Length: 184
Image 1 (cartoon, helix red, strand yellow):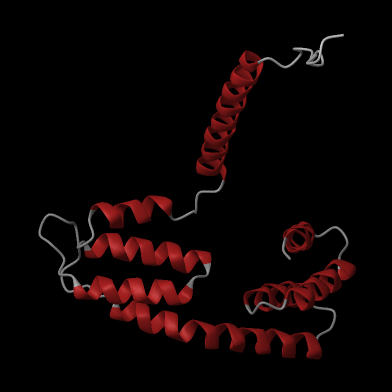
Image 2 (spheres, rainbow, N blue to C red):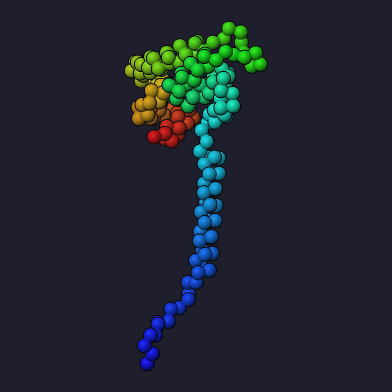
């Protein structure tokens, strides 16, 4: 009997297997990271990315800031749009940019400031029309659009359904309901 007999350990997992496994996991992880970045660039880019790049390339251009402000406004980012227009007024329009003599962004700022009140007035008007003439289909559709602009999605859906009940074959009402179904 030998005094020091060590147990036999199988060599199923050799050091080379662990080394190559680490390299495989590393390259697979880097590939997944790269593919996620490509997916994010293609599918998750903001709609105003082109205008944002123009502002980054020409930070002192009034026209670039105005274009970005219009994109912000179309996306519903009102405070960002107003701040971009204020920035645009701070920069003079250079001679190499096409611009209208005497044009200013102040008119747009005042129009944008009055927009929420105009939408509320429009909403109240169509609500009163629906109350007076409950069989007027187009009033329900206009009420649905105004309610959506105010952020009242449930009320917009109800108004669009009421318009569709009056005329089940109306394509505009079905399109409005499909659009509202995609919103939150």
